[in-house]
Image (tube, rainbow, N blue to C red; front, side, top):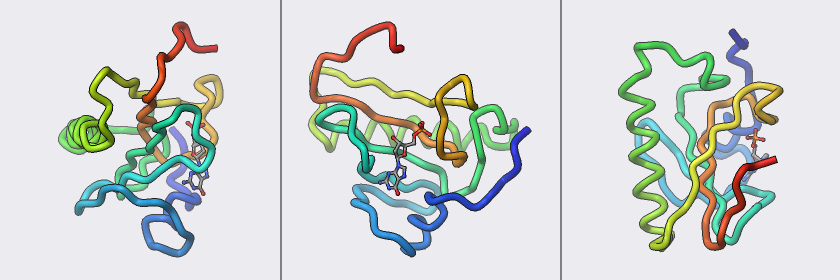
Length: 116
Ligand code: DGP
């Protein structure tokens, strides 16, 4: 279990650093990734600072569902009519670099599989 620590995403939630925010509600925030890997690359995060998916608990089940539905809505608004990918990098082996749970929405080009 990871510690719930302050990350750059906490600062984005509090508007202490700028981000290109595309959606917000009381539970979630979505903003453009600063290092886009596709023409559309948006991150959806919970406002609750859960470090990784592995740290989510049964009490978070509604929040996790909300994040997925938020990703769907954000993808629709972004115009990703021909599909997209939702990725949750988890922990060191998963390639996670920011320890605040986030869903990557990637689209706007044909994506390769399997990922590296
Ligand atoms: P991950 O490797 O799954 O932990 O992805 C973290 C993503 O967060 C990475 O694609 C780059 C993005 N990112 C890191 N710092 C910032 C930031 O300050 N602003 C924005 N918009 N994105 C950031």
